[in-house]
Image (tube, rainbow, N blue to C red; front, side, top):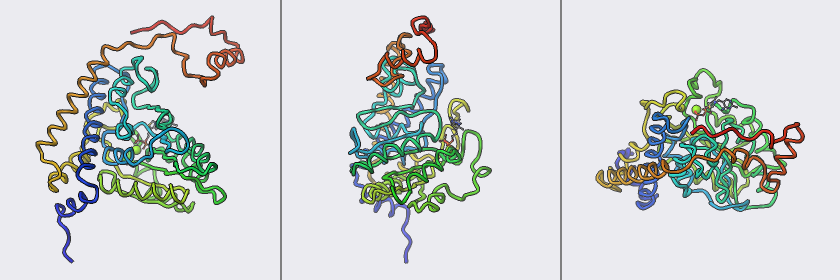
Amino acid sequence: MATKTSSESATSNSKKLGNEKLREIHSLMVEARVLEERLIRMNKAGEGYFWIGGPGEEAFAVPLGMLMRKGEGIQYDYLHSHYRGSPTVLALGGQSIDAIRQMRAVATDPYSGGRNFVNHYAIKKWNIVPVFSVIEAQYLQSIGTAHVQREKGCKGITIVTGGDAGTAEGDFASALVWASRPAGTLPLLMIVTNNKYGISTPWEGQHGEKNVADRGKAFGIKTNIINGNDVWESWEALEEAMDYVRTERKPFLLEARVSRLYGHSSASGAPRWNEEDCVDVFEEKLAKAKVMSREEMKAVHEKMTAKITEAYKKVQQEPFPDPESIYNHVWAEENGDKGRDSFAAGIGIDFAQNPPPPAHH
Ligand SMILES: Cc1ncc(C[n+]2csc(CCOP(=O)(O)OP(=O)(O)O)c2C)c(N)n1
Ligand SMILES: [Mg+2]
């Protein structure tokens, strides 16, 4: 049997996904990358205290956003994302300017009003649950929305993403148990993007198991391990896993091997690493399959660079939060200040006597 050349398999793959869809994926991947590179530069220039984000996960994270059933409430999919999900948020329709706002911590940041790290999204109208910095706790939180979706017989599913090192946390192990109980299996797609590092600690010294996904097998959970740097492989694996969870109402554990192109975060200096770049890989295949010419790709990069630069300049003119807003959104809206005041009374604090500190900007 003749083996396919990489050009031939790129062509057959492209047919399956369709040229228009491939161009859309390319555009989103480039926008996500240009955005993250701008965020890194902002941090290095002192415009934002900390950077962490998703460059290297685009080939997997863009298809994830495109394939989700987007909307608000339990009939739609929930996303409990980790802090590398910016390509997914863009693919769902999120605006890159909002990430720049959160980076600069301005009041116009719609996710946290300028109060949280960058790439800590929260978009209620699309079921994007607030991202938090405590790693892997999102796996346990995801049990909650998946449980409600199971109880109510919904079409919606719950999707949770996290890193490889975090799977050492008990929260991940508990999520495997809760998702797979035979008396109440959950419609939960558990995703681990494995970049083989937890900050500066390499995978090899920390994991007795060969693959994270293998841990699902002990619980009867369906699993798959894929090359998350490949758009087609990611798309197909996600489609299959989502279909399974949606129709069977059972969990699926998907491990995507990805690159970490700028190290862990600004805490490690965010230098460019010499790892496989999924945008380069994708462009090579698109060119070979004649889906896009190199000139067309260059035009996409230029367009996105101009878009992000314009957004960055706009954000520079936007105000920082009023110090008085420091306690906003800490309590559920219906409790408002009463929630704050009864909490304060409980611990013996009078907020009127302890106003927020003055602004330092
Ligand atoms: C509960 C908890 N422990 C430790 C940390 C510090 N911390 C932040 S990111 C990180 C490593 C995460 O590695 P991994 O899960 O592989 O995700 P990656 O950053 O590689 O995508 C650690 C230990 C934290 N944020 N929360
Ligand atoms: Mg990792």
